[in-house]
Amino acid sequence: MSQKQTLSFQAEVAQLLHLVTHSLYSNKEIFLRELISNASDACDKLRFEALNNTGLYEDVPNLEVRVGFDKEATTLTITDNGIGLSEQEAIDNLGTIAKSGTREFMNRLSGDQKADAQLIGQFGVGFYSGFIVADKITVESRRAGLKADEGVRWTSVGAGDFEVESISRPERGTSVTLHLREDAADYLSTWKLKSIINKYSDHISLPILMRKEEWKEGEEGKGGEMVLTDEWETVNQASALWSRPKKDISPEQYQEFYKQISHDHEAPLAWAHNRVEGSTEYIQLLYIPSHAPFDLWNREKAAGVKLYVKRVFIMDEAEALLPTYLRFVKGVIDSSDLPLNVSRELLQESRDVKAIREGSTKRVLGMLEDLARLEKDESTSDEDKGKYAKFYAEFGTVLKEGLGEDFPNRERLAKLLRFASTTTDTPSVSLADYKARMKEGQEAIYYITADTMAAAKNSPQLEVFRKKGIEVLLMTDRVDEWALNYLHEFDGTPLQSVAKGAVDLGKLQDEAEKKAAEEAAEAFKPVLEKLREALKDKAQDVRVTSRLVDSPACLVVSDGGMSMQLSRMLKQAGQKVPETKPVLEVNAEHALVKKLEGSAHFEDLAHILFDQALLAEGGLPEDPAAYVKRVNALLV
Ligand code: ADP
Ligand code: MG
Image (cartoon, rainbow, N blue to C red; front, side, top):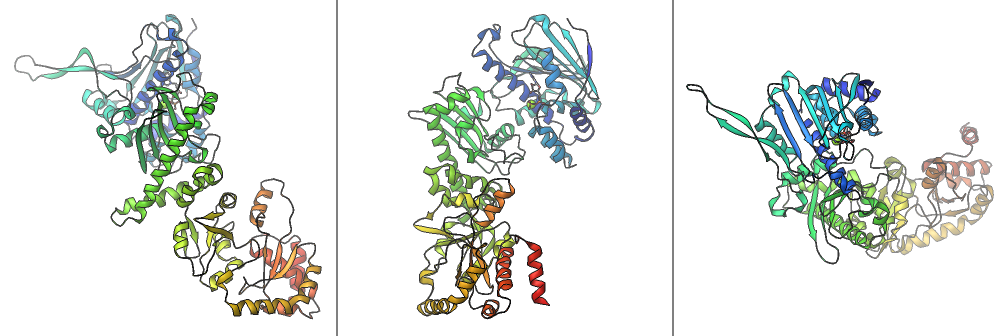
């Protein structure tokens, strides 16, 4: 047996403890939720490890959590017969925070107590929340499979260090004893504890037991009181929420369950609960959150769905159950067909999992379509109407990844997309809306990609579209150009970038305009030749365009080519990009362009024209100093 040793908390834990004990008073009761959730996790872990080693049950197969208190000692104890902790595990798991999320947690603290208390759950630092109500915590535990005298006692008053010593503990599992602070004495009440359990932990599939209370008459002349008996009773429903019939579950229960599994304090936007029958049988309970988690962009940690097999917890973050672009979805899938010892590798190959994945993807898209429908439904509340916009603001960018990832559902996804356009700055225009507003004779859905909204809106390429009153979608998400590579048309209408290829306004241009343009181009030919020669190192070609109204020139890339904006982005990210030269298009009507003919400064003007076009779409001249010199020479 080892001696009692005193160890220091990892610096971050100490910092966190300070915070927990000094500022999180407003929502104290969450400590119980956190400790019960740990007890439940410990039982899940035992069940899972016991799949390959039934000896771990030690002849006590019924897993449960007991919540008891001692009024005299002012202690509250949460006991589970789950996996337990070895001495080393107690030191590691209760003395350090392994997760990198903690730093993130610290950074996100707002100073607002209520919000901060919620964050504790979200970032998985739940155990330490015990110190909100306790000035000392004692944990006694023995890991399943170890000998009775290989137990451990861990004690801390929540300051800089903790003590551990070996103890003998015949029972497997863990008991956490909170020595309550004076101002937390109201937790020494069956009624109070039951109501908290009911609020937060009702759906836990394990039974949570408390001692039965009994009315005891007072001595003669004195009033009676409730006293604890030795009999334990189950105080929660103790059945997995998703396995109950829908009609027996209230919206509040669905929401509370969501909060529990997602560690999100905001209610979800929508959920779907179904029992799927057929060749593959499973239960799905899927939620769409109302806001993005801090690590949404981490495609590595790319799943929010837990896998159960016949109510037995198998794994968190089972990425095979939904495609990566739906990684924001939270929930539970409970399969009746998969083997209990299924591994992540097996999941990838399983036909049942493939069916679950397809079914769940359809379900999520269906939920999103329902939200989108509410948007246009006159009879729904304002709150419901705003839900899709809220969803899209948080997750729209991730959803776009689906265009490249989920070929079979591309059309459904395309309908769910929303964009800003020359008619509105908010991403609210669907492709269907756009089509409905298309001008007579318009044959394409026009869009432009840019780094920022301002760059998109002020882009010279839009001029002729503005003049003719044609709407253009403005795309400023980093994924837009990549995603649009996978979407060539919508409902029979091609999508066309206004910054790629020659503009062909087709039927939108009348005969007179076309003729005038052709004549102008013809007359301009000799100048074009000279421009091509002057700019042959910079531009692939120079041509006359009808897309410009106020600007003298603009740059375009060839149809199917990578936009200059994307190529800049990739270069910044250190990627190799094939060097392609853009095409310079000039507005033969513009005064500056007209000046070219016969100018003594032709070369300088030509280069200025090119560099300005580059500046206008967010690029930089190759040789900025030379550009400035040329402009200055002309100014003087
Ligand atoms: P999380 O539950 O997110 O991992 P906590 O701070 O709630 O974070 O718990 C920290 C760790 O302490 C757990 O991951 C687990 O290893 C250990 N732990 C806490 N409570 C128990 C328990 N009742 N039984 C076994 N291990 C526990
Ligand atoms: Mg926890």
